[in-house]
Amino acid sequence: MKPLFKSSLIIYVVLGFTALALSQQSSSSEQPQSEVSVTVTDAKGARVPGAEVTVRCLSTGSTAHERTNDKGQVVLKLPKEEYSITATAPGFTWTEAAKVRVQPPAPIHLSLELHPGEKHTDY
Image (tube, rainbow, N blue to C red; front, side, top):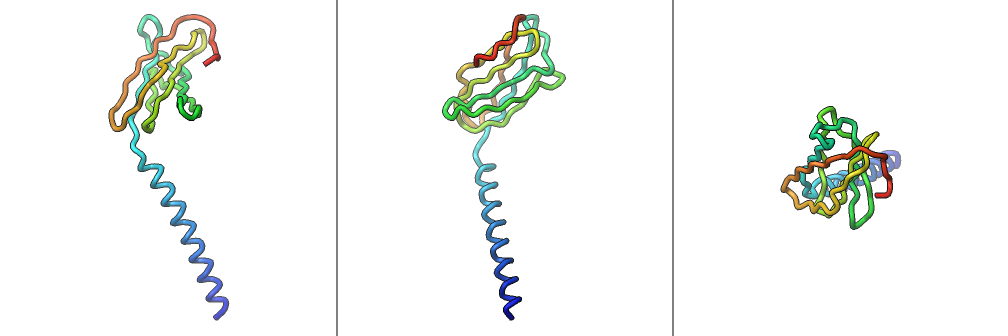
């Protein structure tokens, strides 16, 4: 009987950790988010594929980096917060949307225009 007890205990412990992990996943995925689409163009209005888009949360300082697709766009899912969103690409200076306030579930559409010049990284 002892082997049965030990294996049952192990099963309960594993099930307990699994339930805890699933509850933590569901609580973070349940946080309301907004879809934020960013289109990066040059000064003539042409879309810039492969541009680097950086999102920085103003309250925490955490950042995320994405690249625009072949249409010069990137779509992000962001929780309620205020963000700085920048874009740059080779041969262009960076441009910024300084205080983007995300209020789920409302979607946000941003257009960031790049201008010729050297890439700056002081953002």
